[in-house]
Length: 438
Ligand code: SF4
Image (cartoon, rainbow, N blue to C red):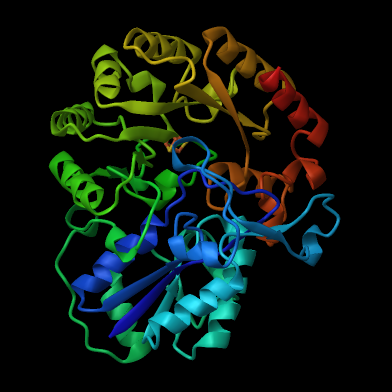
């Protein structure tokens, strides 16, 4: 049996390759291989694919392998017609997809992944293109299908696999394709590596040493999707070494949501990385827990050659407590002190500020930015996105601030302030950003 996995294009008003790799579908690839499938991958968002240059001009890398996607302006969907910004398709052009699919040839199934709910437009369009090229059944999976399965079922895909429980895949495929695949007795997160060998060329590697998060911030979907779990540190390092040998990358990224939770694991992992003398830079872009940074962790991060440390700060004021109490000002002060003492520069440490959180006053956001400026570290503004299934979302629905059947495109954080009167205005968000820049 032959399977083709596809990471679809993004349609949005803005998108940037901030170490985006489709880990979910890479794990599906590894799982399918265990089931005996021959697996192929088309990642329309892999800017480092050498073949891509034949179809489109690819913007040069910015820092540490990140960079702009190739893009083209496309027609705005009706629901966002009035947003005064350009709507674009990001990633490989349609001709690339067609060429790649023809090169790979006939397959028995095509599996398409998805992430953000408000990126469904690009997912649907990619599926339409796929269906013009092949008659093979197209199965849609990924985070979007897990968050709003009813919406995903309206997509042009033939089937939807709306779960992250890979152990259900054999039965699902047996049912839809009339196969006789046997269950395989593995713990996929512990036993499998994300199947990077499906790539020909790649600019950086992304791993996760844990899934889920034991905190329960009211605006976050992670703890509602996953039970928190860590992978054995030795296996994480084996996985890094395996792919580091195949691809000559200089940057390795951990996309964990809770990299520091479970200190024993973290210390072991960092010591193993240090002892292996892996000659790459490491990055933590996902907002680590400031409260869990101590002197030992800070020194180990430095010795293991971490170059990017993002701290989750989000907001100042009473909302820190109300949204789950994951971090308080004093935690940030301590963490930054430990990191700077260990040798990290102010350019290597950044903190996220979440703007437009329901109930957040403009003053809270301004105070958050000013607080971080006093700490003398970098600041990244994250605009709030209402995510179905979170307590914050349920409140918004209950209070009539958002319609339950809203088109997910409108939930895109980059356009929310243009139309939503449940939060900050566009001018207020811009004002916060201008303070960050000033
Ligand atoms: S700590 Fe981060 S990952 Fe965990 S629930 Fe809060 S926002 Fe989500």
